[in-house]
Image 1: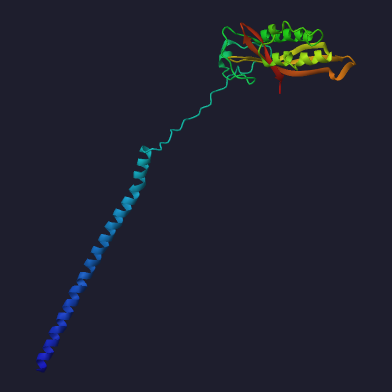
Image 2 (image 1 turned 30 degrees about the horizontal axis):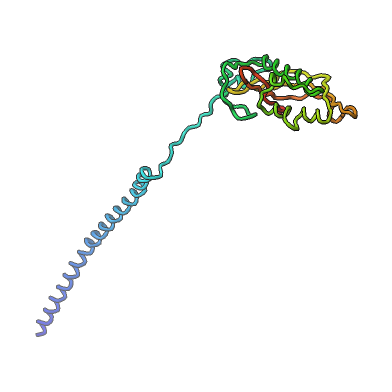
Amino acid sequence: MLIEKLLLRQVSARSSESARGSSNALLPVIAAFVFFIAFVAFSLWFSLRGRGPQVLSQRSSIGGFPTAPAHSSNPSPSSPNGNSAPGFPVGPSAQSSASSHSPFSSPSPAPQSANLDSTTARHLVESWLAYKKTIFSSPYDISDIENYVVNPGPLYSDITGPGGSVDWLRSNNFSYYFNELKILEVSDFRQFPDRAHLSVRIVEDLELRTPLGIDRSKSGRKTQSWVYELKFNQGKWLVYDYRKDI
């Protein structure tokens, strides 16, 4: 009996050791399989995540919010004839290159056969200055003003309108007398599609004569730069407006 119990214990021990050995042999295989499954799952997740933004970007480019293509803004080279030298006429090429409009007022339709040069423009302003001497003193004759100034126009309204220059002089019995009024030089000439500008330096020596004598506060001699705006009106160039040259 003792021998049989010893044999049974030995057999039981051997069977348990063999079972442990077989289970220990399976552990590396199971671990490798689990690692492989985890690696494959992680790779698939990473791949899908990397493709996600590309799909979204493709949809956004096709969807309802398109992005306008960028336009390159290349500034056009400025024309060397934009500013003419004093006294020199601007030729047809320079006139056509001046695409901007006059800053005096809103543009009007381009005139026909309205070529102008600085010499002609100067003579036009000189004629206006000579006529100006007659209308600002008694008897304030403005019957020929439309041969020099555009009607309607801002300068025409300032001179002939109610409360204008002539109305103010006549109602107060004032008169302007010009001892000297002339153009000293032309500093710039520009022709636009619908206007022309002449920049000049003018010397003006005047007296405001009143019933009580000369008003010294509005009399004297001064030299000032002015910009005259000319306009082609009913087949001829006339003075439309003027302002101080800044």
